[in-house]
Image (cartoon, rainbow, N blue to C red; front, side, top):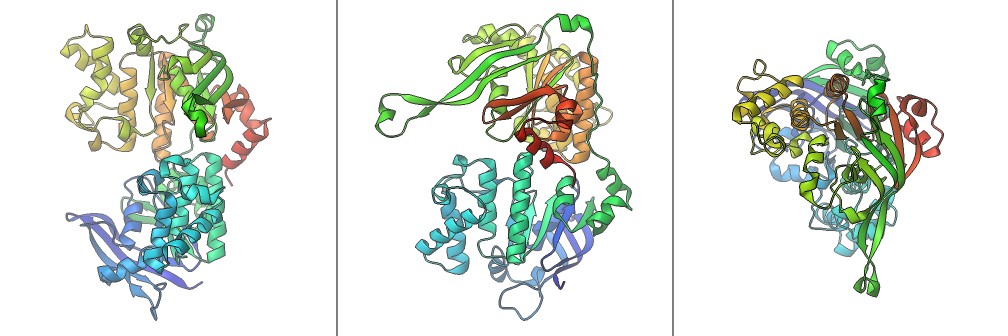
Length: 543
């Protein structure tokens, strides 16, 4: 295969501080290559530097690209004028960004956004561009593409938004596609579908793909070659099979070894079991009111049932894992458990510590101190305007008002030390803000905030999906230790089968609001009975 892109001595610095240190790599025509590393390793900065999308960064070296339309030979992208480079972006080299909800404009239908690329880059008329946009959406496997083209980003599911981004990136049939974590926010089966889609489109168009990721299963399944980055350096590169079977560098070996490990108490003392479940549902049904179409909407609203007759129980020291795709009802189940849905929309029986949620918020205050939540993305769930001390101690002001300032600070310091953060590691850390910490450290702060009021039940909403593999392993080990030490019960919402295998005692498998299978975690994952569960387990299996 001929070389499509050749980077030599590529350096990237911000305000004089280097973040990528003179790296060399090649991408061949039609090749699928993965750029792997943890957050801060420089992989996304490297990809963005190829198209000079880093604002005021200082980029040095050479990036010779042989796929510029109308050019007789390779062109150094770092030496091109901005106007000429704008012609390359989106036409010869396209990019899929990590989070489709922020990459797509919320004010325009997705069809218009795809058509705009075709109008600007290829000069198509508006009507022809719209028709081609619908065709591109159909090529990505979106059902009813004409209707979806007229939809706004918030009206599409996560998988549909990601497909729309792929359609936009492939609109001009680029020679090179840069895919930045294209499946991170997706369910395990959707990840497989997106990978299969990229594979098919790559073969169909003969384009090269540079995939930026920290998901090693994805690398095994998709890529031909892998480049491993650490702290701005390329530490290893080679064929995927060779690197994964015989890693040469210690950092590569640590990444490969960073799979979640099960370390939970399989049984809990009988005295706690006799006390009854902390969370129990019998015939739980949750609905959402929705507008009716046409004239009927004038006379009443319809309903969408998100959870149909779920039954489960969760006791002290146990983890109930809830797994399923987007739209399966997992998050609705979590919201009902937290008492964050209108009482009238929750039917059947849902008992939290033996009580129902009340319509009167004052009556719920004691119960809320016993049920806390850890969200998926610690950066968006922590207030950027509050210090660590204010964030972790906020609940104490509501649920333990008898504590004075010194007592609150002592409790905050205690719980932060319990999650592995203390003054010796981070001098003055109580007065720092969330942006001053890494992703794993922010998630530890979020866990400390939940633990500050000494709850008995934690709802964990995808607590590790936004983290690198090694940080994910550390956070799971922390949660396992806290459960063993305090007898905490976890309602774990996730789409990651490996996390379920490491953490859960029992599993609830949900599809379209229905509980399709339930049982002990390891037995269910080793021998799933329902076809949907079998599909999830197969999709998560290491190739």
